[in-house]
Every structure is written in structure tokens, then in C-alpha cells.
Image (tube, rainbow, N blue to C red):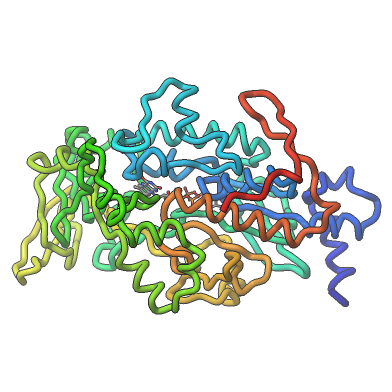
Length: 459
Ligand SMILES: Cc1cc2nc3c(=O)[nH]c(=O)nc-3n(C[C@H](O)[C@H](O)[C@H](O)COP(=O)(O)OP(=O)(O)OC[C@H]3O[C@@H](n4cnc5c(N)ncnc54)[C@H](O)[C@@H]3O)c2cc1C
């Protein structure tokens, strides 16, 4: 720490609160405040990953603070009426004892639930996430982090309420936020004529309007079907033929089928089983292989239940890629090139690019350019250790930003269990015993004492 230490102590006294409490009631010893706050962990993001990690740290009595709007991607950035593509049994947010699964939530609220074959409504999953937060992570602070920077011995975070917070370690669990991808052929269009699917929750504004959805994945298919139900004049443009998950037959699977295509968190199959059950082994694969597997596994496809909403209902322009677009007379002229070299033009009032998400550290607005440039990255994604730590000691990434390191499971809620167990273990090993406190877990409104000597985390 050397010469910067006295300077930092001055800074630490200026901040309104560290993890140890507000500046008014901190220990008179400046150094003890410094050490207390810098031992602690800040989690940025309150989606399935952030909440699962927080629940695990809480259970272990590891001090942390967590910031973000709970379940915001699901609440505000996915369309009303959407169903989850993932089955019920893999659509959980994780607490160490699996006390509050989606199944448990549905039992409590008397919502119809099945592990397999019964699609989960976005509304149910969102409500479940909010209930999980209230019960398992009551200390969540509904604030956005507007800047994150390094400081001697840790990090300094600025919140949108003006508060400055210090932390020894930071877990970035910002999910798909900030990573919307729009093809360059469309990116120049003004927002009145072009938006990303991430911007749409309530589709009412499209009633009676013409709209073109671009994309061939679940997001595009969902939106096209829901826009049609909203009486929008919608067309779907996809580069490739649309694919859908197969509809469950409801029949028991034979022993051979179960061996050849075992069930897994990412659907049936040996490869999916490997990706969902062995993210740590995935991490040890050669980087080229990891990148290849992530970019080629679980390509675009819709849920089986979306087929009937689009096929025969929504006009499909399949085998076409956008080439150019311009606004003329209050409408967008979209030029498409067919896979066979043919060209055609479509006129519409609005284009929705349901063209997915690409992780790129340069797009995280709260990191300064200088800080970002210090994080070792490959193709814009952070290079991570087997403990999710980036090249900046104490800075961790989870969720989609960790997919190139731990595999495709990191793109789904199912991966949050592994990430949370792994991080809780790492954090527990590296913090001094006197920092651990006995946590209180809220269970159905009752306080339940936890213990730091709880059984080991499940593998
Ligand atoms: C249309 C669509 C359908 C999907 N369907 C499924 C599905 O069926 N099953 C499935 O498992 N997965 C599905 N996914 C993937 C889904 O993104 C993940 O499952 C899950 O949401 C990832 O959780 P997360 O916590 O990493 O990120 P997110 O859920 O994206 O949460 C990130 C959180 O970080 C917060 N945040 C961002 N920036 C800041 C900041 N500066 N300060 C504070 N907080 C911040 C956000 O507000 C948000 O709360 C789908 C994704 C899309 C787009």
C-alpha cells in the first residue's frame, strides 16, 4: 500500500458508508474502517446469478453488499406473455439448501408446476425471483452502480444515489444488460424506426402498426408470435430455417434413451450433460475449443409451444439477411438478400432486432476505458480463472460474460447454482474468520438461524 495508504484513508473517511456502516458510526480508528470495508464483497446485479451468489454468501455469513434492480432483465426487458424455454426443474434461483426452488414457490402460490413439459410463464419466474430476493437476499440495495474503479487494495463504486462504496472484491453479475447486439447494416437507423428486443416489454404500442422482427432464435420467434396476438402487422425475417424444441411426448423414456440421451440442465443429450454438469472441466479445455463450443452449441431455436403461434400465422421471410435499410417517407425500406442471391425489399414502420447479445467489456458503461483496458480479454470477454476471477485480482465475472470460460450453461439460470457454490467456496477460503457472522435466513417470514458450520456446499 505504501505511500498511497494515507491518501486512501482520507478518501475512505469521505465516503458515506462502507460495509461496516455509515461514516457517522464507524470505528474511530481510520485503519479499522479501511480494513473492514476492504474485506467485503460487492455484487453488482440482482438477476438469477447475483441473487444466487448473495444467498450463498449470506448462508455462509460472509459480509457482502448487493446492488441492482431485482430481476430487471425479466421484469422490464422481456415481453409480457412470454414463456420460458427452459423446463421448470432448471429454472431456479439457488440457495444452498434448495429451500426455495421454483417448484416450492409454485406450491406456495398454488401455481400449476411440472419439472418437465409444462412451460413456465415469464410472469411466474419473475414473481419467483422477487420472492426469492425478499426471502433470501433482503439486504439488496435497489441502486445502480454508475462507476467502478480500482483503488489501492480494492475497488471503489459510485451508486446512482450519490453514495460511494468501497469493496475488497467485486462480482459482476450484470447478465445480458449492456450487451444488446444490432447488425451494422441496421445500426444507423434512428430509435423511432429501430429497436432491440431488449427494449420491449409491453407490446401494446405496436397494435395496428407494421413491424418487422429480425432473428431466428427464441426471442425473435416469441416476439413475432406475441406481436401477432397484439394485432400488429408483423413479419419475421430469419437467415436460417426456424427450429423448435421437440414437443415432449409425455411417455416414459426407455433405458437406452436415458443412457444415450441423458436428461440435463440444458436438455437431453451427452454433450448437454457435459456442458451442464461439468463447467469446471469445460474450463480446462483449450481456449480455441472452448470458444468454438460456445459459439456452436445450442444455436437459435424456439420453445416447442411457440411453433403454433407463428407457423401459419406470421408471414415468414426465411433465408434472408438484411443488407441495408433507410428511412423514406416515414417508413423503413429494408433491403434483404436471400441465401440464393436474390434480393427483395420490405417496407415497414418499425424494425425490432431480436439479434441477441454479444459480450463486450467495452460496452460496460460504468468501467472507465483505462480500467477496461487492464482486464485481460479474448473476443471482448474476460479471461477467467477457475474461480471466476479476472486478470484484475478481486474482480469476478459470472453469467453470460463467463460463458467462454465455463461453457454454454453460463447463459442460463441453471449455471447460477455452480457459479454461486464456486464463488462462496472461494470467498470463504480467502476471508479472515473474524469477518464471518452468523446469518439469519428469512424463511416464510420467520427468522431461521443459519450457521457458518453448515454442511459443505453440494457439488
Ligand atoms: C428473451 C430471453 C429469453 C430467455 N429465456 C431463458 C430461459 O427460458 N431459461 C433460462 O435459464 N435463461 C433464459 N434466458 C437467459 C437469461 O438471460 C438468463 O437465464 C438469466 O437472466 C441470467 O441471469 P443473470 O443474473 O446473469 O443476468 P440478468 O437476469 O440479465 O440480470 C442482470 C442484473 O444486473 C443488473 N445490472 C446491470 N447493470 C447494473 C449496474 N450497473 N448496477 C447494478 N445492477 C446492474 C440488472 O438490472 C439485472 O438485474 C433468456 C434470455 C432472453 C433474452
